[in-house]
Length: 324
Ligand code: SAM
Image (cartoon, rainbow, N blue to C red):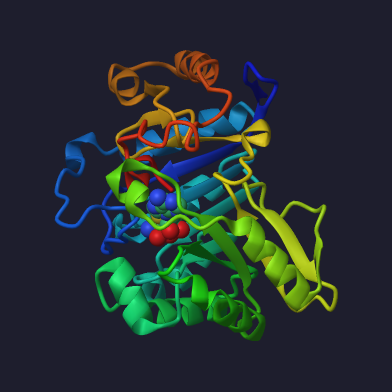
């Protein structure tokens, strides 16, 4: 087991397989951004599998593939199949913007990806275009349909809720999720890099109160996926809501995860700089015992909490660099 200095068991790895993305969500990647990692610096599938195998031996039970847009990494289903076969891993999931999902959903399911989170901030085509920088809604909805047809269930919809941008869309998104049998997850925008800081932050606590009254929600004790969301369900069971509130009510005391970026940097906290570079160690021929020791050493660096609220200008890294 990996236990950090604050007694938290680390059993969840977010694995970024690329820092590239086909969308430019205005709270995430700056328009015109070109400083992506060189392919030579990407961890290879062999290297990723080695690192994840060591994590699994150290007690990691869940891995989430993310990015950037993970489906831009060529042959992702082949990597997924290798990871899902690793002893000890119980849950391999994926976060995607959905634009490429129509082509890959069935192969991902066959490769052992068990759950999908799909990012969608509005059902209004113009609003999605304004946020993502392209007219992506039709493709995303096709991707969602393909994921449902491939048997992914439940599918969670990640919606970054922003004041005066898409806050008026929350009820429509809830109705859509009820109709389609999806779980809606509302996320507070985090001040990650200039892009994140420029997002119109919306406190989700009043939204939660409003939706609780509207749908007669009761809080769920059961964890749904081991991530940072708190969940509510309507008494009739038709609507499930997850709320991720890193700003208005942070959840660092129960943080159980670390993040590996495409270049092999292990980030210990989404909102802090503590990290360890694993790629140089891998390429210098470190053995598994050495890798295990390096990961244990890195876990010692995990900070107690982020400081998005107290120091919103601290983080220059934006979300897609770390892996969302
Ligand atoms: N491309 C994939 C996607 O869109 O789901 C995976 C990576 S994306 C960085 C993962 C999640 O991070 C998305 O749901 C996105 O909305 C969210 N995100 C990005 N920047 C954010 C920010 N500054 N604050 C809150 N969420 C953010």
